Each structure stands twice: as structure tokens, then as C-alpha cells.
Length: 212
Image 1 (cartoon, one colour):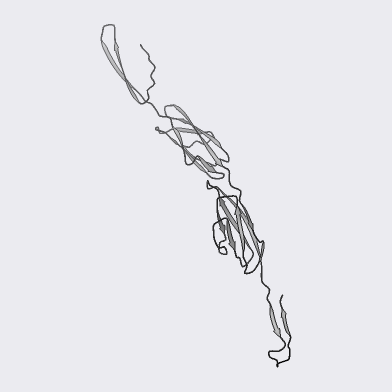
Image 2: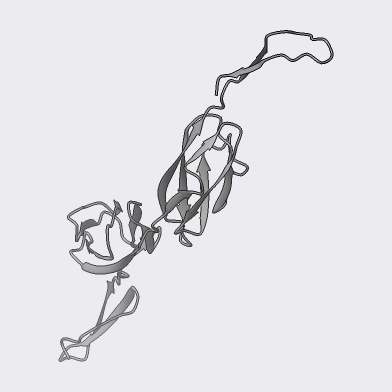
């Protein structure tokens, strides 16, 4: 046959033998290149809301052109998906061959952290328990007046009115923040005086207290 269909799985050399009407033979060869289909690499297939993901194309050819479904034209792009998103890339090599690949990115729903205090107001020198809910792990600040920087329940002993912030992380590492305030009332300044520093047995004196 003068023509055949070829679909090589890799770069292949083809040899053809021809015989003319006089029985003379001739030969020729041709190399057909097979270019592999590019595919997308993702730094993460799932991410938290607000986080970035790097998408890059792996290909065995150079000098390709790229067109992503979000309009970007680089081989590597940074994306900030706000929901489950399908990204598609069209890759055109210098020979005009076009390949397509897609990747689905998932978004984790962030936790909802809440912070409360057992007592909203304490006297100076006293303590209260503050607690956080809605996540798996917690980090508190400022920590100087707390018995621990981490944990769902910590003891706060502030000397002045203080607002505590807490960052909670879910099982995927996605964060959320909350805050709680503890009001501190300073203790009374009490003074005790007497109308005399000494008395005789059987007599009395007057003691006076002020400041409360």
C-alpha cells in the first residue's frame, strides 16, 4: 500500500521498501516523534480558604505555550481558590500538538471558634477560666498572665483589664480566631487609724477605717 496509518507509543523509526516495475528495490526511513501528554502538578489538592496552591505543568517538550482556564499563560501559576474548583490547562508544543489536563482542587470549610470567660469581671489578684470551642487545637495570646499558652481551657490572672485572642485550628490546619475580655477591678485602698496609740487598762479608744 502507498499509505498506512501509524500510531506509535514512542518515537519510532519506520523503514519502507519499494520495488519498481523492473524489480529494483529502494529504501527510505522516517522518524515519527511521540510526545507524552503533559500533566498538572499541584502543591496540594486540598487547601484552606484564603491559602494559595501552586499548579505546574510537567511536559517532555520545551518552548510550549500554556493557557489555563483562569486566563493565565505560565507553566506554573499560583491560585487562591475560594471553593471547590476545576482548573484546566491547554498546552501547545512547538509542533502544534495540543494536550489538555485538568485538576480538581478542594476547599476545607474553616472552623468556627468561640471564646468565653467564666467570669467577665474579677478583682485584682483573682483569676478566672477562659475557654475556647469549635476547633481541635488552640493558641492564646497574650500569654504572660495565663497558666498555659495552649489548650481549650486556660486560667487567666491579669493585673489589668485584658482582651485575650485565641487561634483555633481544625484537623486540616485551617484557622479561625476569637477573643474574650476580662475586666479587672483594682482592690480598695483601706486605711485604719486610732485616736490614741496607747490606753490604760479599762479605758477605750476609737478605731476608724477609710477607703472602702
